[in-house]
Length: 149
Image (tube, rainbow, N blue to C red; front, side):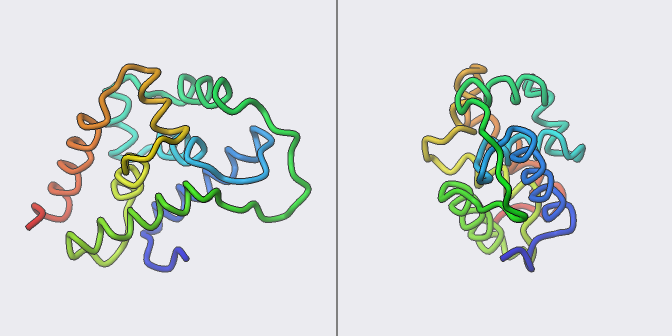
């Protein structure tokens, strides 16, 4: 599923799995993906930091929205349907830009795909307009890969 992801994007997905385990959840959802993007330390996490989106705040909101889980004894966690939609949207966004690999900015755009999810609710609770975040993520893609045609 992740063969066309950049190494940084793959690492972000692994961070999301770690976040799900820390919070005791049985699957990896959009809240965990947002936590991973914020915590991965690249350009997108710095952009989010500019909006005041920090790991502590996001974790607090994710716990508020989802609670803590009871944990899972499974070696591998599954992705929620919304997380799978994020990956599909991210892949489609990369294809639209004729970019071979899905990068972290694509994952953020996937989180902001218009669905009501834990991730979008976190932004809402924090008073951050999704369109503003989308614009900054697109600017980052333009900077790295050239403008979208």
